[in-house]
Amino acid sequence: MNLMFKAFGRRTQTSPVLKKPLAAWRLLSYRGYHIKALGWSSPPLGVMLLGLIGTIFFFAMTFGPRPYYWPHTRKISYGNSPPLATRAGWMSLACLPFVMASSTKVNLITVLTSVSHERLQVFHRWIAYAMYVLALIHTLPFIVFHIWKGDMVLQWNTSVVYWTGVVALLGQTWLTFASFGPFRKWSYEFFKISHIIAAVVFVVFFFIHCDFRLSSWDYFIASAVIYFVASLHRWDGRFCCSTLAPPCLFCQVALLKFMHRPTRWYGLQASTASFASFASAHASTTHPFTICSLPTICSLPNTNTKGKTTSVLTFYIRPQGGFTRHLANHVAANPGFNMTVVLEGPYGGVDCTHLEVSTKLLVIAGGSGAGWTLPLVEHFLRRVERLQSQQQKNLPSMTVILATRDRASCIWYHEAIKDLLDRYPTSFRTSPSCLDIRTYYTSAGKGDLDTPSLSPSMQQQEVKVYPNEHAKSRMSSETRLYYGRPDLMRIIATDSTSNGDREKVGVVVCCPASMQQDVRTAVADEQQRILQGVGRSEVYMHMEHFSWVQ
Image 1 (spheres, rainbow, N blue to C red):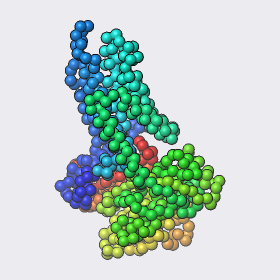
Image 2: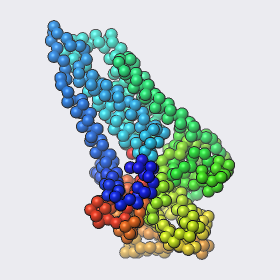
Image 3: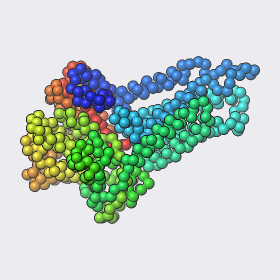
Image 4: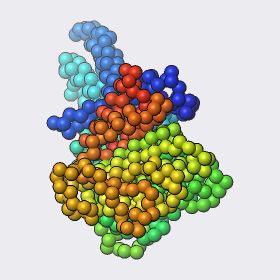
């Protein structure tokens, strides 16, 4: 579907013939399930169906053909390789290039389909699981056969194939089980280092184990080419820069700005992420952060001054633990210093083509996702100014919903929105209602913000909040504060049903798992309404995760 949209653009979105097939595709892409007892959210329904098809395929190819073992006798031998082990071993080896292709940040799949690499990680893990199970099925028949034959110890002592296979299997076991979510979240940096070491051990001993049998080395050549081409492309996207201004802490959010001359960094995505390596803090590791700014208009690729002007890369980094806490402490202890940073990317982001065709945008963020919304708001302001300059009467609208339990985040976000509106003052002179900013303060205490106190019965009631009185006189679009959690399913359903047949609603999300589940359930319900002939609006969703790998 991404390929179709890239090839035909807006015609894909406006064609009535494609409305229901597109809704069916999106239903499979958005529908997911949450098991509250396990704290686990499933991948989309379509991804799980692909996993089921793959599972059936591998088990049918492995256990379908007979026999599993040759009909050996003490006098007649058909060879030392059981058919079951041979089939499983070659299929496991054939998975290696696909595991490599889906593991890198830059890969051919992303180039062809525009599916960002973090969304491919589920396939990377599942193919690796299949490879591991096939490796076990490959190993056990050899053990059974040689124990029956009585030469298991002899084979272990004299054949390089057996002990190298065991070492490779041990490395693969670590790669498989140490990649589970709880272990990654416990210590991602340790996971990354151990993952690289185990991968090197696995590939080296796997290569020796195969011993150039038949066409086995072809799979290693393909894997090496895929990986090293991707690595070269990654290094091509790296550059060094220094902070434009000294890093500072504001409302417990570290603000970092870098001067940058755009090349391929700014394409058709907003709210992209880059991997940063800080020379003065954890220089040996890289960490993903969202770019919370857009390039200056004169530096965009379609302008005459492309590559001749500089833009500012802005990062808002909220100290959590580990590296970000260390960075915040370093900034607080060394006020006014400059740092050298190596940046790699950008990766992911929201396709601006979808933003351009949406008549109504609903941006939903929670907690640390606040900074992620700023490039989307800025892109919308630029779009409104451009449409106004073209004398367009039907302007798009945007609603931004931020849910946070942190008082400092509320204050900081109001200031950040105010600064954006000050930079684009003409966007709301003719249409003051096209941007709606809503902040939901979810903390139990309600008297700690500089706003009127509310009784419990007035929760979810609107309170107009301005950072200061001076800002209030200049802002045509108010920032509104609510107490309590937003009813996301109701909001999405209302926005989707209040539009006409040709309206296109874009829902863009970066929030915790509980909010994500509400959003994708609501958007999937709208796709189901379209299939039933009840829904009128076309609803598109883009979802970003808090964790880099889910």
